[in-house]
Image 1: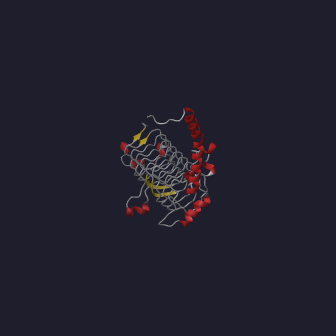
Image 2: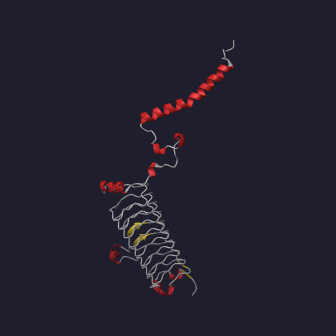
Amino acid sequence: MRDHQPPTGTLTARRGRDTCHAPGMISLVLAIALTLSGDALPSQAMGQNGAGDPTVHPDTAPLTRAVVIARMAAATDDHPADFSGANLSSLDLSGQDLHRANFSGANLDGINLSHAKLQAANFDHATAKGADFTGAQLDLATMRDADFTGAKLAGATLYAVIIPGVNFTDADLTGVRLITSAAGAKFIRAKMMHADLGADPNNQPMGVMRADLTNADLTGADLTGANLRKVKLTRANFTDATLTGADLSLAELSGTVFHHITGRQTIKGLSTAKYIEDAQFDPQ
């Protein structure tokens, strides 16, 4: 006995009705579910025909100055303000006390942090292109692989900072006080006139406190009048750099590259530098 089969016309009509009503039913069920769960999409996140707009990223929406200051006011030494991964680009936070704040992975492009207190702040993997840190206190801060391309740090203090792999390309470090291990850091075309990277004589009882620029790239940097006394410059690259009046007394120059530099005859203390025989100078 064969199973009873409805006429072909009946099947076609039924399928047509199911296809017609399925989208409406699904939309109704989805709307009810979203309403009950409280997760309905905000109107600004909806595109044409109700489709989600993939360009909207609520987690990276720029923070306001008021929100930043409120977080800092609520911060404690045990629970410092957390701005990790946040977007603080172009904010004016000049003169603010943001010590120990966590800016890891944050977008700080164009931010104004001039004369801010940023001791022990965390800038690991952050981007701060064109940011203003003029006169800021950055002692004990960490800046692993951070991008400070074109940033202004004139007159800032960076004592005992941790900055391996940091990018200071085209940055203004005029008159900066820098005592750190900056192995592999980039100072390409950086303005470092009268920068002070020399050993700190006030801390000699604790050991030599000096800058370590091993493998650092200072191609095209301007170090006019810079203090590089006792700085470890092993395999650092000064190609096309300006060293007019710079002090290299007792600096370590093993494998250091000085091709096409400007101001060689005015360098101070070069005869006292260590491992100078291993340095690479152009023939005179």
